[in-house]
Structures are given as structure tokens and as C-alpha cells.
Length: 66
Image (cartoon, rainbow, N blue to C red; front, side, top):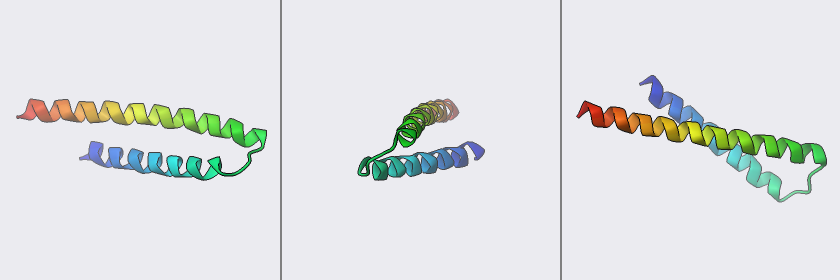
């Protein structure tokens, strides 16, 4: 059960980061903000990978149970 709530939290974080990035695309950015955007993009990629791994793991666990 803890795994499911953890996945839901990661999904919420990913959704918020994506929304933030979409809002920032429409405005001109100073260099500092561009650097921040690059870092958040990388964090988003890492979180996406982690979420994907967790979903695969959950699928494997579900398959093993049945």
C-alpha cells in the first residue's frame, strides 16, 4: 500500500513540474531561470524513470501473485 501512495505522490510532483515548465515556456527567461529549467527538466526525467521502474516492479509483483 505504501508503494501505491508513493507512486501517487511522484505523479503529482511530475504533474506540477510539467505545469510549471509549460507556464515558463511562454515568458522570456533570464539566464538563471534557463539554468533552473534545465535542472528541473533533468529532475523530471529522473522522476519519470523512477516512476516507470516502480510501475514495472508493481506489474511484476502483481503477476507473481496470480
